[in-house]
Image (cartoon, rainbow, N blue to C red; front, side):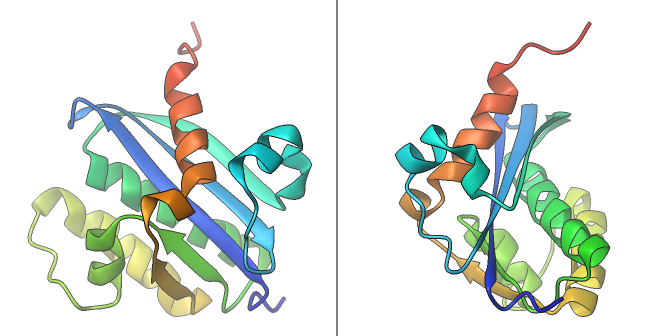
Length: 149
């Protein structure tokens, strides 16, 4: 399936850094210009959505978890050439090869994301936080939900 008309937005959150962490991923057909208010009124506008707690992690580890989830969904559905947006300049630049991965905790996550990106061929885009509000909302919603007993 051609993904050049699908846009994923990814965000990770960590309260404590490291601390309780989560990520949010949302995908839309087209350029993904959906306001947070419109999304909250009708979450059905998303073609994919995930909000998940991931235990104790750093913010950068949570950012990688979000992008890995988006790339895994693309691989699963055979979506190639999607646009993947994140407000994590570090993660986007590392995946583009512009920054080295120096942190030992990120090396395995980078390797997984890089391998998936080689297969999926996404356009990786760094966006400002205000362009990533829905993924941020989902990541925080996951953190705000109490853990299952």
